[in-house]
Image (tube, rainbow, N blue to C red; front, side, top):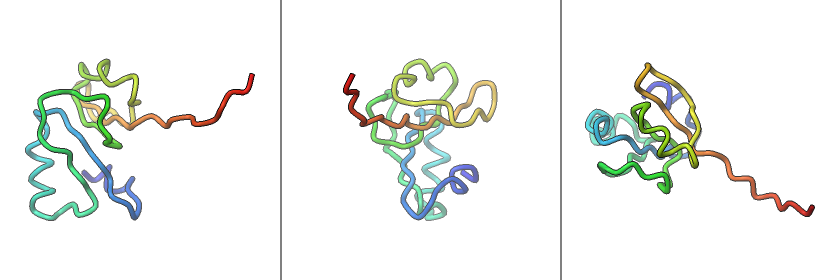
Length: 94
């Protein structure tokens, strides 16, 4: 939470988590300790199409998200914070 809070600016940070990690994040969101955080609902499915900016997952779930997310921070050998990849909207004229 500290890492995300330091990264966030004046806008809301949207986070989705692996189902296993959802309860502690939900506690902070439900108690009002993270008014800057929008936590996506509990879901056992890993969803690369989510509109979340960040995804907190086990390392073995990274492959499922690699097309849309990149590694932001490795907290341990099995826990990763991923950030949604920037989309390049430029048109290639060649």
